[in-house]
Length: 117
Image 1 (spheres, rainbow, N blue to C red):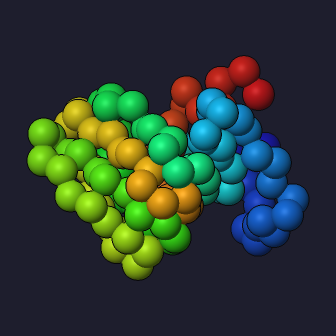
Image 2 (cartoon, rainbow, N blue to C red):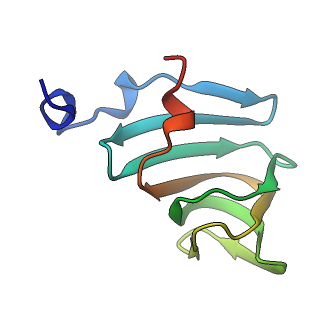
Image 3 (cartoon, helix red, strand yellow):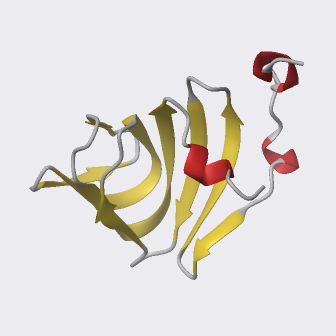
């Protein structure tokens, strides 16, 4: 069976379990194949996405809340409805100013997120 054959094409949010990242951040890996991944990340106020980098390209939509986002040393406060793009290997992170949810899209998929499952 190929990866594509095993991927669900319709995803019910209630069927996807939360994974605790830390006491202020949790995530749901909604869907992925080898080329693309969609992840829902919920932050409590004060939650931190530590500054890091990876070779994946990333686009993030701010579904709710308010976040101070840092990309390549530049910082901007973003709110519900906003989005940001992170090129491959650029340092980035976020601090949650008001509890909310980020929707992350990665290309290719984040192997490190599913290792150990």
